[in-house]
Image (cartoon, rainbow, N blue to C red; front, side, top):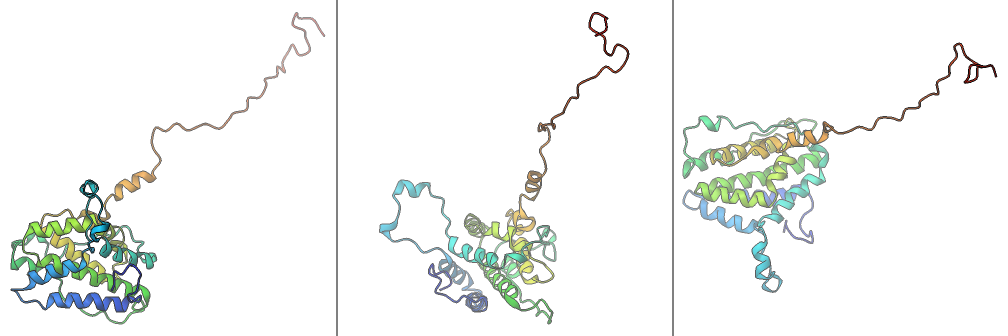
Length: 262
């Protein structure tokens, strides 16, 4: 319903948030014996639907194609950022590490401990404030629910290899570029839920040895800054110079070349 190409689903962010929230509640309610199978079942729902056999490309073309299995899901998140693009302007933001720092944690990265540490936790309600409400608030709450579901699915996968494979498929589909290039740049004070979700993602990725710098810092910021600086050693054309004729105003004015008077 949300990923329909003809956009027949609900347009308002509040209703779309409820749909994704139900998936996250369904995942949260799973027992210790069933959360892995439930997570993999939800992941199958979020994958792009396979094309019918008559629409499949030839085998030699399919072998050269790099799969992006979650392109539609990632496109849904990217479209939200485009609809409220004016809030994603703080490009100097850096996502903090979760507390306590995962580097000093004694927990293992596999099994139940990983899920207990990195599964999204309930967040306290935000008191009334002037910035609460409006399309920006609804959009960022919807994005936060999407990230909660993402973090929950990653935390429910049993091994580091499966979690990193899932991250790689999402990265190939364009999600990490959106997280580091857009979601990171909203104001932390006003849209703290989004930053809390990104913090959870960074902590889980760090524990699994996954490269998280693009999401945390917005990769290639230094390269972008260098591209804006003028290149050194480039030849600069000097402005044209006008040379004035020289007049001899001293002795000898009015004399011919042979010393005689004209």
